[in-house]
Structures are given as C-alpha cells and as structure tokens.
Image 1 (cartoon, rainbow, N blue to C red):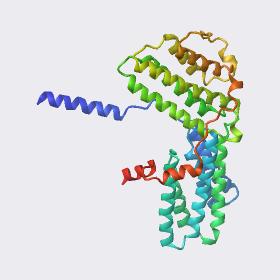
Image 2 (tube, rainbow, N blue to C red):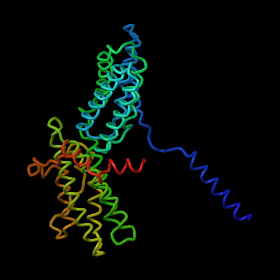
Image 3 (cartoon, helix red, strand yellow):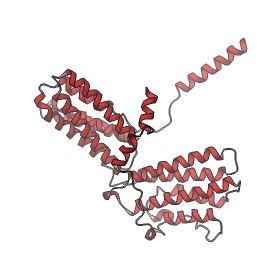
Image 4 (cartoon, rainbow, N blue to C red):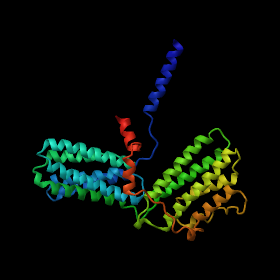
Length: 348
C-alpha cells in the first residue's frame, strides 16, 4: 500500500510540474502588436473625429487579422480580404434584422454553418465561425435603426482593410518566407529519414517526412498568383519536386535495408540549412559537392544543390504547383466521405 501511495504521489507531482511548466516557444509579439493596431486604430480615429461609437464598430473589422497565420502571401491576401468582407456582411445583416428576432436567430445559424463549411472545405486554421457570429450579434443588439445597415457594413469593411494592410506590410521584404520555411522543413525531414535507414524508427520517420513534403506542396500551391510569381518561387518549387525524387530514392534504400552514404545525408543537411538564405553569396563558402558518383541518391542531392545555387534556373522557369479550383474544392466537400462531414460527425 505504501509503495502504491508513493507511486501515486510521484505521478501527481509529475503531472503538476507539467501543468505549470513554461512553454519555451517564442512569443508572437509582432502578430500581437499588429492585431492591437488593427483593432485599436479605428477606435482612436473615432475618438479624434468625435464619433467614438462608429470607431468601435469599425474596430470589429480588426478581427479579420486573427485569421492570419504563417502562410503564403497569395493565400493570406485572399483570406484576410474575404474574412473582412464576411465580417462586414455579418454586421450589415445584423443591423438589417435588428427588429426581426426570429429571422436573426435563423441568420446566426446560417452564418455559423456557412463559415464552418468553408473553413472545413479549405482546411483553414483559425477561429472559423466564431467572430462572424459575434459581429452579427453585436450589431444586431446595438443598432439604432435598420436603415443604418450599409453604414455599419462599410465601417467594418474599412476596419478589415486595415487588417489586410497589417497582414501584408512585410511582403516587399520577405515575399516567400512561408514557402521557404515549408521547403526547409521538408529537407530537414529528409535528412532525418536518410539517417534512420536501417533503424527501428525508419517507418515512423518515413511518415513524418511524407507529411512534411505534403505540407510543403500545399504551401507552394497556395502561393500561386500572378503578382507572386518570381524566380525565387520557381526555385523553391523545383527544390520541392526534387525533394520528392530524393524521398523515393531513400525509401528504396530503406526497403532494401541498404545504407545511405554519409555524403548524401550531409548534402541534405547542407541544403536544409541554406534554403532560407537569400542570394548566391551565402553559398560562397559551401563545399563543392562531388559529381559523377554513380550513386542515384547522391546525384539527386547534387541536383537539388544546383537548383539552390541557381545553376538550373533556365530549365525550371515554367515550374508551378496549382491549387485546386474553387469549384473542385466545393464539389469534393459535398462528398459524404469529405473531411468536412467527418469532422462534423466527430463533433456530434
């Protein structure tokens, strides 16, 4: 009994220590500051103009910034814009139905269902329907007259456009930071996979590497837009396509229990550590990779290195990964086996 009690006390102390352990992740202070500006600046402008009430309404558009995550700017631009548009429509509809309680109740359900479906169909992370319903209810209960629906919608939309500017301000400085990070994670996972060949952890690491490559592919496909096309995006896309070839080569080695050369693993580590570097000067001190080794995996890593250092730009200018069309996404989402309905059934 005493031994069991001691074990329980030890387990309880361990759980208590884990509960109060500090998370070592860096604080997203830049995002927090931008979110504060997005919501606070409209209020300040309203105070300066003597229209505090209208400033509060416009600040609701700042909630659109909370739908921003570390994603390509092409996707971020559309996502924040349509979030702002959805918030403004919710605000206008809330005012318009301020004297119709039964219709307002039905509208809350419709807004929530539509937002949840869209976020589920596109697999967007974020608060989903929460703030759309919140903006609707606030405007529904604070509206002075249904005739002011357009004014409320316009004010919220203007606040949302401020959020859009705050989300996009860094684009001229780091236009492809999200894509570079995703491709780097893919090559880091490949490095770990190459080093795990022949070990008991190989098949577990294999799943992690494939997930990292699929995540990078999704990120790159979401980065496609006319105004984001550049040699850098072509380079990152080519690196990803080469990473899939390298993955296939490593899997062949793993299935045959054939060891991966140390040179190939070192090459992958070098590539992963250099992807986020900008400009060719970063590679001046990098060792020249061995050529004509006769080893397919080492040759594949050498090709990836050539893409990274700009020696294969001319061959890959038309490389592009395209995201699924709007019509295709919604057609797949209405399938009974889609992730949207599976998640809803889990919640039910």
